[in-house]
Length: 243
Ligand SMILES: Cc1cc2nc3c(=O)[nH]c(=O)nc-3n(C[C@H](O)[C@H](O)[C@H](O)COP(=O)(O)OP(=O)(O)OC[C@H]3O[C@@H](n4cnc5c(N)ncnc54)[C@H](O)[C@@H]3O)c2cc1C
Image 1 (cartoon, rainbow, N blue to C red):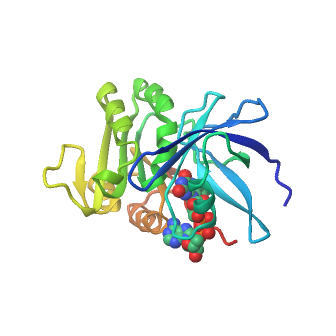
Image 2 (image 1 turned 45 degrees about the vertical axis):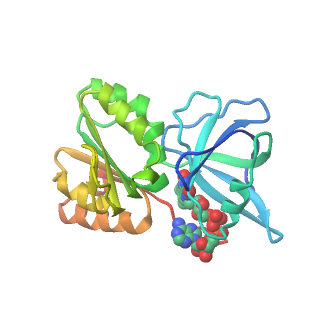
């Protein structure tokens, strides 16, 4: 397949949790990078003489300028090795944007936006759009599944958003290590448990699921048992690449 690639320059490098890397890019050709909140890019590179690509959701709301991706490390991963070695000024090839994991023209409802790990990034990009929807009568529950508090990427952004916007609730769900003194927004157990605890109903709710494929499969099964039609379930599985 011939990809329509463009060069990106690294303009920022930051560890945003003990394990997750954030990279900020700008198009090196001076063109704006236009995308919808929730979409992803592919990065293209060579490994062992082979052309490979990997997908990463964009973590920042679209404004045509610089944008972030967040990378969770995979042991000996090809893209992991490349991306964790980048420094400001380096360039890589990318293509996109891709994907239909975006907010649509829905009637006012409750959005349940659930994610594991870096699967939370599309929702961060959606925050300005969600702000407008809240003003129109929507409500939103944002659920982040993560091992422990220290890995709760972008938690402060979501907490600040909820403080500033009535109708928005953020919950960080810890699957392995609960803090001794949990805060109001923190809960124990897998994110699926916390989705179920919201008593989701197809008459009132639309559910977005992003990240770990097992989490998504389990949540889909539970939601289908609750008679959710496919059009009210939207998902982005972070499936490992085949090459
Ligand atoms: C639409 C989409 C969006 C994505 N967005 C993001 C994102 O925003 N942030 C992000 O960090 N990742 C994201 N991913 C995953 C990302 O594309 C890569 O698959 C991931 O970074 C690993 O790539 P790698 O080249 O480092 O590892 P690879 O070289 O592909 O894998 C190395 C080895 O690890 C195994 N492996 C790969 N992934 C995993 C895993 N998750 N858990 C356990 N074993 C694994 C492989 O099977 C292989 O044996 C997304 C995937 C998709 C499909």
